[in-house]
Length: 183
Image 1 (cartoon, rainbow, N blue to C red):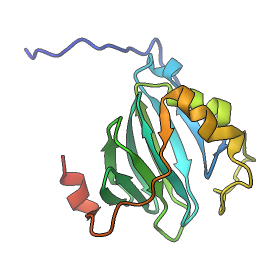
Image 2: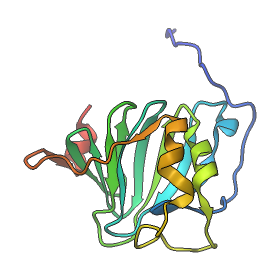
Image 3: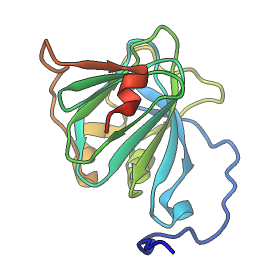
Image 4: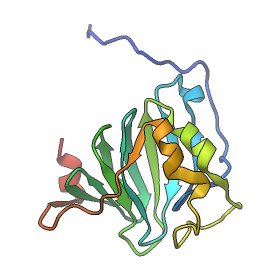
């Protein structure tokens, strides 16, 4: 018999979520697949897409860890000073309190899952996102005005945009299998 710690969070019921409504999340597009209400607060699951060359600015989550799983295309994730190039099937964990940024470094719209643990990030999206038409593509340029004051509201959700750019020249880039094996 194994000593397994008790679960802190527990989903209250089975939850089937048909395709969710899509929203523009500042520079990306996506939907909330499962919310904290669905998972007993353990996590939220999002599906997201970025157009080629589009970036999510460097920021830090102080309340939740963030995991990525790429389905289509390529996603460059900078965590601290390390750059990881994720391709279909690759995953990466970005712990809270470490600055990170995202960029579609490929030549097609990417598609990936994001998991935030514990949940709560989806509430930030609910107050900042703008509905997108069905089958809309990811935006190819930043919005003329920030979507619903994203940067101003972020602080209320423990998210700090630091305005930093990519890591300094000479920092490592990890790709494919090597990136998956790092722990």
